[in-house]
Image 1 (cartoon, rainbow, N blue to C red):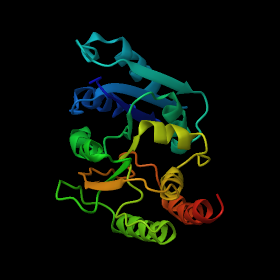
Image 2: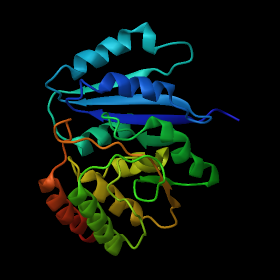
Image 3: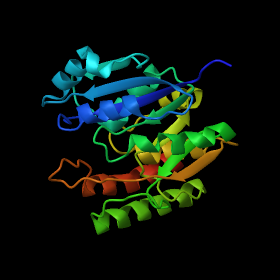
Image 4: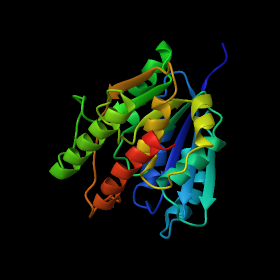
Length: 244
């Protein structure tokens, strides 16, 4: 049986502090029996992120025997996470495609948990922060309230019973996400409600949730999503469920 490929999509914007550790952790992560394809999209970074990635690509330290090749895409203008992910999805070739945030709030050690359902025919897997007994950093109360509310609102429209629609750990069957990617329009954090609405409209998909760990960041540490994105997410849940 031919070896299957896992495409790991890493959108990055101004993450010079974390990007080196993120790439190393992804390179060393257990991906079960999958061969890795790593696609990094620099979304118009203005710090030293791009320089650090280029240095890593040229460094033998990160490319030992049997290590995967990294595909590095540079966008001159910052457009947002959703736009960067769309670029990565369309570039991917993997049988399965996984999103990895560049800031390590989501742990590459959880890849085996996320990939396990695909052995049972999963089409989509969401990594939930709310059904897990794995370590969670304790941070903002109102962020958790907003996440729960947005998931509840999304579920009302999609009629699927997710516990964490806003999770950054989403995994898809490769041919499925590449087909959907051509239709994606949200350029920022609206990607989460948009992709959820779109997969919910496809009949007979097998959607799974698994519990994951989570090490959130404070704003002082570089967290980017804010209350305006939460307000906009309400609009995007309604838009993508009723009008797209």
